[in-house]
Length: 169
Image (cartoon, rainbow, N blue to C red):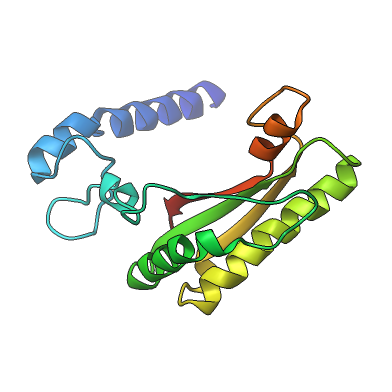
């Protein structure tokens, strides 16, 4: 009896596996571009997921640098953030994560808190200028991911930044 159940289960699994198709067959049959991941049920023949990740504001920069022990966004970054906010407002399915950093001076707890304040200041500016609050998230790295490993003021200045990193939902 046990052998019969095991054999029936194996035959069922093999017949299901025999009916499956490869991504190349699906892409070729549906007419969707083969370069992106396909999701069924979204239009004729699937949807090219790479379109969700394509594009961001035409701005060449998505990085804001901060003064020592400060979370105030400098005046020179406000136009850039306004452009990002307008882009997000016009693309409600797009998401951005603000990855905020600090230099190594101070305790780890202090640096994470300072990074979070930097990210929150940028998030607040984006939301006030039209981005959806659900489109913007903040990750505070503190001193954990330095852009520069030297121990001098020039290097510290490079590590006090927050970057806008785009994705989608």
